[in-house]
Amino acid sequence: MYLVAIGWLYVALMMAVAEANHPSGTVLGGIVTFLFYGLLPTALVMYLMGTPLRRKASREREAKEDAERFAASAAGDSAAEPVAQQPAGTAPDAPEGRTQP
Image 1 (cartoon, rainbow, N blue to C red):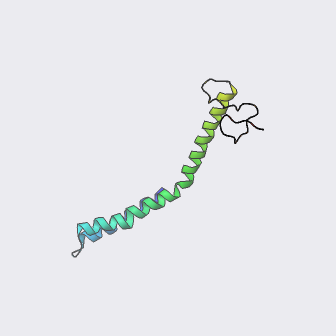
Image 2: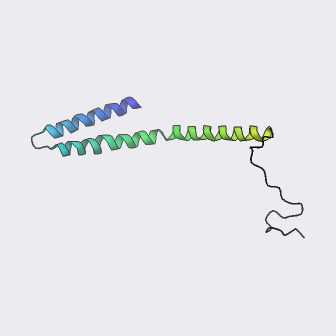
Image 3: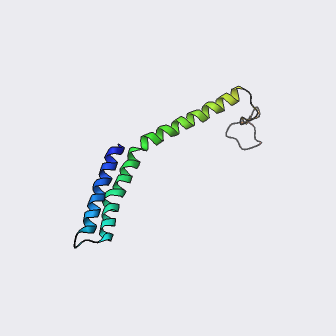
């Protein structure tokens, strides 16, 4: 994946150099050629191709955090988040202080 990106950037750089060295070309034209024909498309393709890897890393990080949270609650650690208990006879969707009939 990186070899193709490096190769394309090399081709775009050579095109930019040819643009800048041409008798009717300019350095600004070479910079624009490299930017819009080489750098931006390559960056976009690399970002899109890296999406599955970022998604996988995010899932692994969340799974690790969940496992740590589960281990902490199983050990009875005081650092675990307390679970709010509802008073007996209170409906789950009832406003605070109202009981079931």
